[in-house]
Image (cartoon, rainbow, N blue to C red; front, side, top):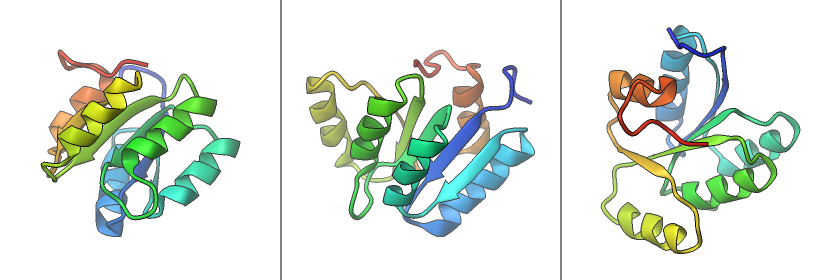
Length: 130
């Protein structure tokens, strides 16, 4: 169970099964988790219902997870960000974002539920920063 009050989490992955599966895992742990397979839909929803945490794949068609994170942080500065990816090219994308002052953490796919929960609840040495 999370140590903090229930948070609103947006789970974004262009593979619907991944977004929905992670949202189910998070709901079973007491979070209000909402899956999105379209990053643009998550961005629009965040404008009216800001999430406490954005959990997003990096490589997606249309809007990358990094671009999505940057855009959401622009109007939701307190939203925590956690990226995940199964592609090696992601490190280059992250490095480019860092050059512009955006520091995001990355989990590798497949994400083990226990590792994900440690990151979200802060029971990890490299817990998320705001």
